[in-house]
Length: 268
Image 1 (cartoon, one colour):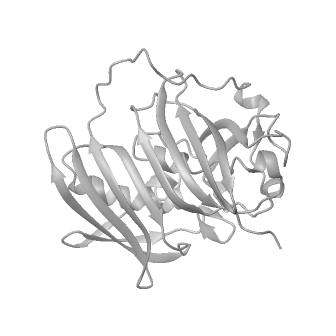
Image 2 (cartoon, helix red, strand yellow):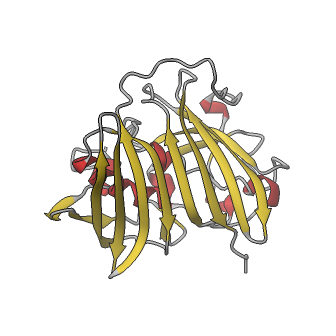
């Protein structure tokens, strides 16, 4: 827990109102991958602003375009607008700006996931060894510095932990916050963007793969505990990849699905 008696996530994604539809935030560099803040982390402050003006509590569908890298350790300005609200859904737009330049822009639908009936049609979670048998994510193996490890505890399947070891563009493992901050629907989009790129399993040392666009569909409120994740790249065309992922809670319930387009940077 942080020294301010609140979690790292709560403190470092906090937004302060500055006017109608605008908030200030301080972007931390503790969530960096290399020299840039993780994209899901940048999104979290925008979602928090959206939640303040939404008539519904839970993000259901969030689509975000990452226009340029954010600046860790720098202030930011968040804007959010309620576009439409109804009985079951609120639709909102939002953005994060730093230094006069828009870093991300997002559209989201919010709903109430408090009562979700079980479905006979669902994705089954991956078969993972127990957490203690999985391997902590390594910046050395990915080929990039990972300050993010101070905030997110990620344990990779032991058969996928080394560069190129999986022999396929797939990665799976367990994830939670290092300070045991509860996992909820507001931070599932961040966790969906916190695993190493699945291309790591096929190509080895690939460094940072910045996200161009990320869509996350939140399915239900997660039970307490670790989150299980599985991600696979289905296409790499030129230097642009498509990756599909899913998250399950400790009960085996599907809590989120994601798809992103990423940019494979050439290693020097």
